Amino acid sequence: MPSTTTAASLADLLETLVRIPSETGDERAIADWVQARLRECPSGECLRSGTSVVWRGPGRGRPLLVLAGHLDTVPADPAAKTRIEAGRLHGRGASDMKAGDAVMLSLVETLDPERLAFDLAAVFYDAEEGPADANGLGRLLAEMPWLGTARLAILLEPTDLRVELGCVGMMNAEVRVGGKAAHSARPWLGVNAVGRAAPWLAEITRYPVTKVQVEGVEFSETLQVTTLRSGRTRNVVPDELVANLNYRFPPGRALAEAERRLRALVPSEFEFRVVDQAPAGDVCATRAEVREFVERFRLPIAGKQGWTDVARFTAAGVPSFNFGPGVPEQAHQADEYCPLENLLPAYERLASFLSREGA
Image 1: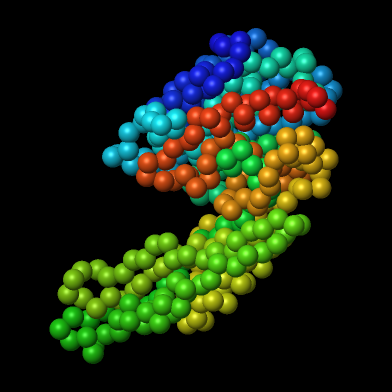
Image 2: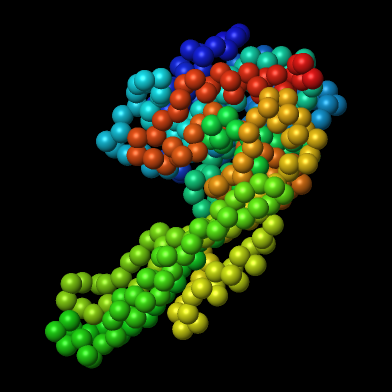
């Protein structure tokens, strides 16, 4: 186990994590590796739940601070190769969010828990990139209720060393447009579901991006058709078209209100069904520890334009924000990368804050 953290040690750790495949649902190998590493720590305890791993430092009656990062990634591009090139580490999960995991792991391994200003816990969890109801952090908050007593949670999601507050909410809804099948040589005997849906699709795919201010932080409300399926075979008039609407909405808008707004954009004669949803995360800009972190390091702030488990922590009453070395725009890219120069500053700022050096 390293006694000090350097840019090189962080780069090596990130490369190791990226080279362990961990697509959602297949996180066991990386969870086993992280658990084995954490068990070498001289203090604290290592807890396991499925393919999530939690390290809990010794309690000394100080406020609890939780660092959190997910271990899973979206599916890898077979053509993309893990490599270091021009100061960037390329590979699936490099930015989203194994760079954050590498920083978390190094903090646990190198900081002396007795000298920190907080009691510390680090959560490496599974299934963040899949359906919201299977998210590993939700399971951990239920199984380990002490996590919900934290004074602060920091998600090491990719932010490119900014503080990103809150997060947008997410809703996926399926819209089904019915028709009537017929032989394509006699289309007048059927109703083409594609033709019936076409005017609405032309309109909904032009839904504008809308900027929304929440507590002085800007978010973008977006709506996209992300999947579309229709037709059984090439010589049959399609009797069904199913479109998935992916809706992102700002903090302060409840799920029920988001559903009402989305449903209003769909003709009443089309079937509408919400299939997945997650609430927005609260903007915690006025919390003392959040202000202290931002002001201490003079960091830029922004709204998190994406869903993160800040939403899950704030719903549990734990103030939270996003701060990590990865680059948000690299998340889910085919040849994803993380700038190696971001790793050490992320580690040093978090280490200083945890010990309140210079405060």
